[in-house]
Length: 149
Image 1: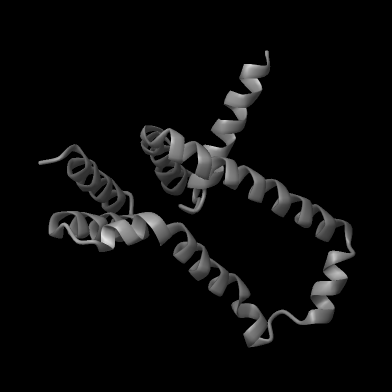
Image 2 (image 1 turned 90 degrees about the horizontal axis):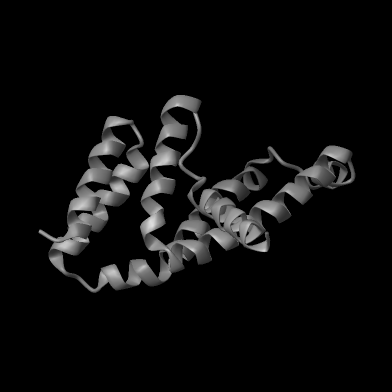
C-alpha cells in the first residue's frame, strides 16, 4: 500500500472521528480515485482549487438571489467603518491565502500539520475547515519574516 493511500485512510478516519464530514468525504473520494487509478485524479489535482472556490462563491453569492442582501444595503455597508475594515480583511486574507497555495505547492508535506491544526480548531474551537490555505499562508509569511532577520 502506498504512503499516500495510508495518509488518506488516516485523514478520513481522523475526520470521521472529529466529525469533519466534508474532509472525510473528500478523503474518501480521493482514496477511491487513487485505487481506481483514474485520470480524474489528474483533473482534481489540476482544477480542484478552482472548482472548490466556484462552489464557495455560489454559496456566498446566494443571498443576492434570495433578497437577503439588497444592493443599497451593500453600498451603505461599504461606506461604513466596519465595511472598510471588512474590505481590508478581504484583501489581507486573499493575499495570505495566495501565499498559502504557493507554500503548499512547494512544501506539500506541511499540509498534514496545517490539517491537524484545522481539525483541532474544528473540534475544540468550533471553527470551520476553511482555514487550510490561510493557515499555510500565515506559515509562509512567518517564514518570510524570519528570513529578514
